[in-house]
Length: 494
Image: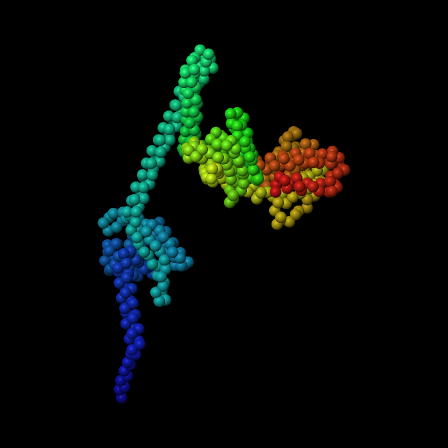
């Protein structure tokens, strides 16, 4: 007996099939109409799928692309093949995307550049590498043109800088002669000249000196622009540089009669070329002193958003202040060379010139300080890293005394080695005026700042503990004699 079984599809299944077919058609349409070339590679690096854009871009037929090795498409050389294979392996292994550029010969025999975007795509239970191809030949050509143009502009800029420097140097001589000659005439023949001639000579002298000053600035700016100016940076006190600059302009120019109100609230430190920075600040202070309206200048130094800010405040002639940065171009260049900023702010009738410099946190380099009597008795020790456990100070003191004895014997004289570099740290030695007390500072980074601070600490120690040092054999073992040493250390290192 024959049984015929007829299975009627439900209406719901037919609707789902229609939706699936429609979705597949839309997906295929989108892929074929997508302007970028797309390839799907299997684990063997063979083309499993491609869209029409890929076929047109690679100028090859469907039959030639299907199951073709990815490396054969681009005629990749062995070294390029290895690079591409490593990229595909990483994409498959770690499931992330990568981008690379590739130069290859197209079907017309022309060199072409393509950018390849690699990623993974999962279809049912199979994983493929999706490669999107973007022709960047024109972009590469444009980049090459831009690079060549930039090189040409740099060459022209170098010529301009060189010409400016040479011309400025050549101008120095006649300007100097003009200024000196007019000065000699004024000093030697003033009684023989009428007032009109004297006035003209003074104009010539002042003009020559002013021009000579401007030429000097041009030469210095040219050196900065042409990278001939090398900064000799060290960790320096901004407070000291500011005070030194202020004293210099008073000593060098007695005609400046300005009252300064100082508000130097913090002693901040920065990695700077002290000579160059002082030069820049002096130029700014001189300009401000000559062009303020009320003969009062307020200076302040403070920390602002991890920057050391020197603020110079005064009441300026607004016509003059507009030309500020033209007048102090050299200073602005030097500040910027230190990765700093020079800004101008106006608040009412007052103007602020703000010089901001990156701060150096020198305290992070501090590790340990020992103060030891030469017999090996520890008087004081300070661990700047409170997280680390303290060690046996007596043993360390004895070791340091022994080390210093050996170093002095090596030198065979009265001189003493001041510091020793020891891997990731530096040991800085010094002694007080009687040489009975040894000061040892251990730091991660050796800065001239530390030796200076140690000298200040020792000077204050000699003044404060003169009586105890005089009777050191009896006072060294009594800790109460040295209980305030921490206050001295705190003033210099905290």
